[in-house]
Every structure is written in structure tokens, then in C-alpha cells.
Image (cartoon, rainbow, N blue to C red; front, side, top):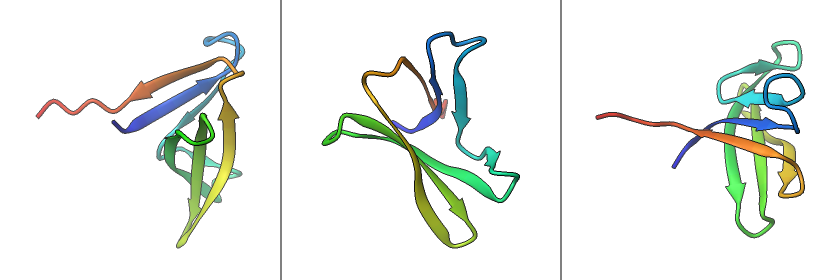
Length: 75
């Protein structure tokens, strides 16, 4: 299942950081390309792109409070 959004932090409404696929970041120089779960590391990874380059930007392990939203396709 595709992850659409990850929220990291103890208070979803006022204290969490929210990362959404397609969101412009870093002064609009990069876009969030992919959010995925890495089973080997038990962590969530946020991948970003700038033109043709895709980079791992952030990684969150299970010790952080995390909320996940998945893409839901009603076809």
C-alpha cells in the first residue's frame, strides 16, 4: 500500500511535522517523491527529488510517535 502522508511528533495537531508526497520543500527546490517503510531497519523513509536526482532526506525509527495516511483508490 502506498503511503501518502506521514506525521511525526507527539501531538498530531500542534506538535507534529507533516510530510506529504508531492509537497514542495526546501524553499521549493525539492519535492517529496516517496514515503516508504523499510522492514530491515524498521523505519520510515522520506525520499525527495530535484529534477532527475532522488535522495533519501529523512528517516524515522519506531521510537518516534508516527501517524500514517495511505492512498486509497476507489476503482
